[in-house]
Length: 517
Image (cartoon, rainbow, N blue to C red):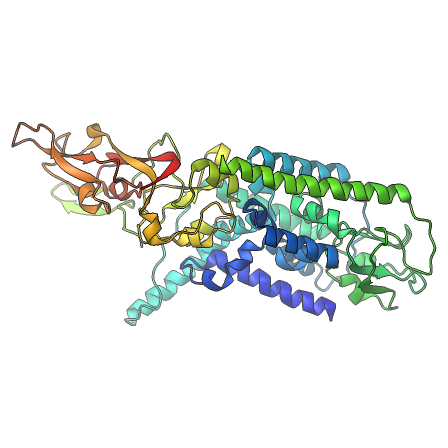
């Protein structure tokens, strides 16, 4: 029953979290958004003490239930491992933990967290890794399927579906997602939970607590026949029958395969508070290795202090619908035949533009886990993963395909890590994330390509752009755009709708610290 219950819960959590990244409408987040907020790293970066304490208490009580039920990448590894053994004999075997690798990666993770190198933190976090895999590899297939239904529905005069543009938002992030998926699948196919128990630091952090769990699988040596069935079924390779019928609870993820397999009733999930990790149950009276217990307690205390201290220091550091853009080739028939409209490319910005509600560039990147949840729900194609090495995979705003509509606050509603604070549409118009700048050399009016334009002024939602005469003393002078920076909020409507190609004549630069009107 324990295994069946775990599997049912794991499937529910896994499906629900995956759907959060596939639901580009943002509708599911009203009911299931809390699933992203109870993931370990987002809770740490958001300093959500309630969630952090709850996860640690669950681990102390029941072991690493988080890894086998709540973490989507952990559940995915279990699925791959089960698929690899389907119809075959399970042949896992005990292996000693690679301490140098496991704790080496964990130390690097904590240092990166404290130093604010969140691109590296995001690369190692299991929740973020699964988000990137879904958003980059599975979401396009999902959206193509949606577009197929939209096409069929339209032919029957139904608008139950609407077409979603599918495009590659970031090649580096796409390649990272592929590499992560390949690594996870290969290791899970061959060795079960090796990737989880050697590379991912979240599992290592919880292992400091799980080794002292009150309830855990315990081997009754008087009933054990040393058949090794439980060891062969253990995806975490943490059961050592020949070495004294021991279980390494720091790596055990409570999948309950061993209990389900044992034919002699020698394995029970029961209260075992106070027993040292790896100590066999009664009646066997093996001497307790006091040195090992002492080392375990030191690891527990040091790990707790560094993990929670890292999250606190990181927080202290942090405190100091789509207007279509002509970005696809369009054929225009004229006397000269057909001409292609050049697609827009992003200008070089002196400061990256981060979403409304992020307060500042530094605060945003110090909290962002690069899970791509905000990218998934952005209806205006404004958010995409950064290609900048320092902020690789973390989102930024750009306006080649759309602009940030003042009434849209979906990204602020779904962010689980506190990188984007939840705001209302009314509050959004009070924040300034950047300001527009005019390059007259690119303006079609100023360089004589057209006699008049004013597209940027007509579409500015705050009235920050006015068309003024280039020569105030000449009534026949052409009108060029002039930006009132006190009114500009940095939404990018002017940049997106400017007809100049490939670089807009009016572009937005971000503010390091966002201003509030």
